[in-house]
Figure 1: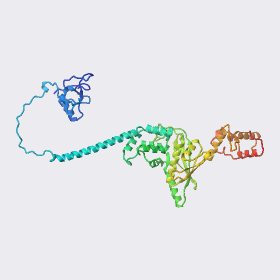
Figure 2 (figure 1 turned 90 degrees about the vertical axis):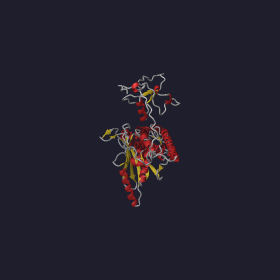
Figure 3 (figure 1 turned 180 degrees about the vertical axis):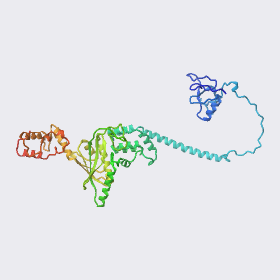
Figure 4 (figure 1 turned 60 degrees about the vertical axis):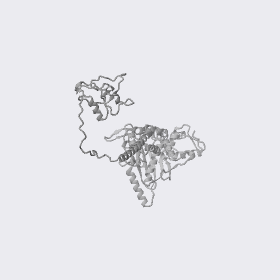
Length: 498
């Protein structure tokens, strides 16, 4: 045997003994890899007669060491081909062995060597037919699984494409789409696992929870669309409502408050009464600041998903929901969220969720109270109410029971909006008869009172005129004595304020 070289040829060199062929362009030879089968790989290495040789994935043997019978019609090696053409020296060649005389027939009794020998070929044929049936069945199952995998790959190619489709269909807003894209880490893989699993098996991954809660928080319609598209790989809406609940006072639906309200409903029913409530919502501005308390980071947009994303925008408002008992003397906040602006449709979706939650525990909501920014009018329109003066219908159906819920706008806030509109528009407003209503009348009245040094039985002061520095004070726009005075001024025949 030849002793092992310090470095064996690999890559484009032939590994055979004494062969210096190298794979180059225009060489005309074929360079074959060693078989992957361990038995054949050892057989090829043994015929090389190179002591200590170990074939690697880069080892090759050129076609000069194979006979023509080793190739099939397509020019490929047969599955049993072994290199046999070598130029070994005499000491490595096998010496011919003289044939031994035939000892004659054996006198030993022939017995069955193996237990699987069959006495009849029919049994073997039946076994072969059965195995062929199994193979056909498994091939069909493999084909079905491959087709299902291809369909899922086409359907769920990219979550970004799904979110873009939701934006095109106006199911979600721009801010919602940004939050969804920021929660994509690991969602696609977990979603595919849920689709391939049987229903009801295993818990939901935290990344999938965050994605589902974020999408359903902003739009139930979009969530149902995505859930149907993904073949129920996402949790049911009832499951999400349980995730929304918070016991320790964190962001989301407060589970302990809901439990207390349910106990109040049970007590009222024992007395034959029904709990009637008004649902209120309002936004409060908060300081835009990110802080870490050693365990959790606060200050980002938080909708109760339980996952903090450093890429989320900083929250600027706290959206608070509260119920006030109409036939009782109590009120309690039931949940809050940290947001960075929301559209009317997104708020309408939240209102529906709270109405569902309160309806499940037996509370009948008869009114919805909010202030009057434009997004709230869009919210009321999405809920089904009409605030158009020409077609006024300040009510909408309950999403579960269908009874009417009436809209009550915050009177104090609406007065402030009316005051702001009257004072900031140069043209002023007009009454039903077309008579102009102008802010300058109030300014002139205040000037007369300051010039004369007395007040004409009213509470008009300079603070009412210079209201821009105290926009939030309710008592400034709420002053009934001034319009009464103006009415008496005109009816008494005094000089008009022009």
